Amino acid sequence: MPFSDLQIWINQFPLLKEIIALKPVTWLNPYKKNMGDIKSLPLNIHDMEDAQDLMRRFVPFLENAFPEIAKTHGQIESPLKEIEKMKAGLNQYYGYSIAGKLLLKCDNELPIAGSIKARGGFYEVLHYAEQLALQNGLLKKNDDYSIFGSDQFRKFFSEYSIGVGSTGNLGLSIGIMGAKLG
Image 1 (cartoon, rainbow, N blue to C red):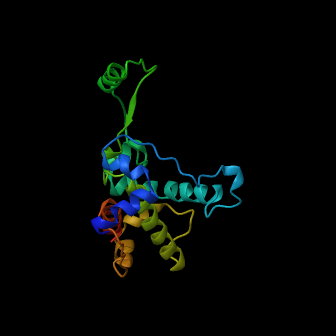
Image 2 (image 1 turned 90 degrees about the vertical axis):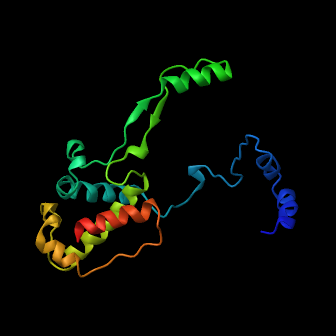
């Protein structure tokens, strides 16, 4: 956008003036809807349960492929840490007393790829791998999925490639999982 168009944008979106002035702002989505008003979503609870089931099936493979998650039984979780100094600083700055503990969800410490996007990338690759294995008669859903780390599976998956339109954390997670599968 040429700088000359900036005033047009500010007129159309007045909050930009505050943002440009580096002032704290709050933007509330004017198109926000209550869940009760939304008739359908592209995903439902069954899709979420299917994803959870897939990740559970892959626990034996994940634990072998990534020893750092063996202690969490294949769960890719980040720690919660109490941040007492931050709480004290906020209390002092705002002259307020925050009740309870102030916790930080440390997704930067997620095992394997260190990113919240890793779970979605891992899921997509594992879902694709499972579909390929099922379609080619290498797998039944009640099998022990540690076989995904076998030489037979690595050789099979080496015949495939994965393309992803991201060089960031999502791309990294997809590359890591793809490499583990072969």
